[in-house]
Length: 208
Image 1 (cartoon, rainbow, N blue to C red):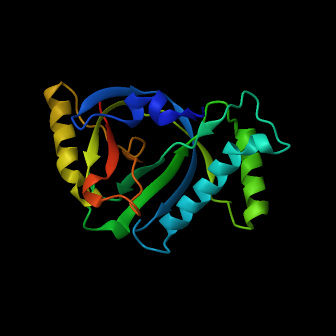
Image 2: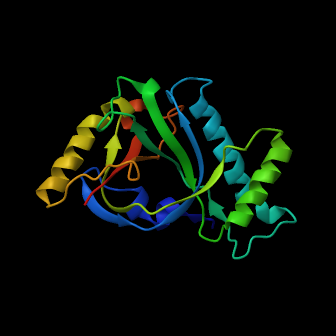
């Protein structure tokens, strides 16, 4: 049975639909940075997602190649995630999606080193004949956060965020979104297939 991060680390990927406080350890990711509306069909975000999965599946299937990763075990590729912000805006303005800055990421198993990552980028570039130069090996130490499962459309997230922020304050914390600590979403449903009213997105905000 392949290792599934969502099942093995439910506290990180499957929060309840009520806010909770959690401390997130440092993790490494495949990442692509960009700007613009994520809903643009042929936009920068959609291209970035394709690049992420290209590298992610190259690593996942590496055991079938001549390249061997030390400590490798079979695993399910973790869900797509995103860090989001808008210049000059406190919080998030969903009415102005063109102004979004984002870092789109997929978590890497701990056994994947930067050397392994570089092999995967080179291999994917050759195999897919695509430009993977914007893909990076990214480490992020998220630390103390408030998180909650959001059910429904992305546009309805402000209501869930409001609950999270209220819960944090009631428990003696304050929201600590900065240029280094960002609004974070983990996508647990495929918007191309899921009923929008039932889509699941884990949301995290840094606190102090």
